Image (cartoon, rainbow over all chains, first blue to last red; front, side, top):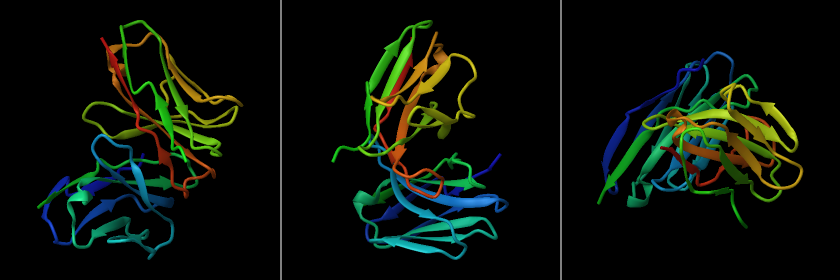
Length: 112
Length: 115
């Protein structure tokens, strides 16, 4: 069973500030890591899928890094905006298993 | 360009009744995943289907739950003889390509309430 931990559980950030949070997972048999953004009353939306150690992906002001050897990924948001308020979920997979094992998420609240 | 559609969005059933949840994937996607979110918990994988095939149902309870994805029409998650513990949000997602290294597109979910 994969134990996926996300920290912090929640985060209040002033508009304009940059922030980051962590997803930790067992490194053995790692296959892929998904990051999703989930706004209240909407559907989870895919941000990144990462597979390679050292991989870094970017989409606008959001970027993510991956360390498969030590089992963690960071998500960074530069210059936070109110529309960034959401819960950010990570979900690794093991081997080539189709199952995404979801973390509990980091709830990000941007204060104007 | 319609995304994943789920209906109904809200479903109320009395204990012992059947619940049928429908999911229409993104047009052209032939891979469907069902997830359940119990109150105060995270998403949990239930089942992965391709057209006319169940690929992985290891996350689905062995009794009362079944899923299908016929050649024509939406994917159906069926819960027979519902109990209060089945109250949850059920999400489906689809992808055009199989495998864990491709992103999934989620529907808005069906919120099932068992009274």
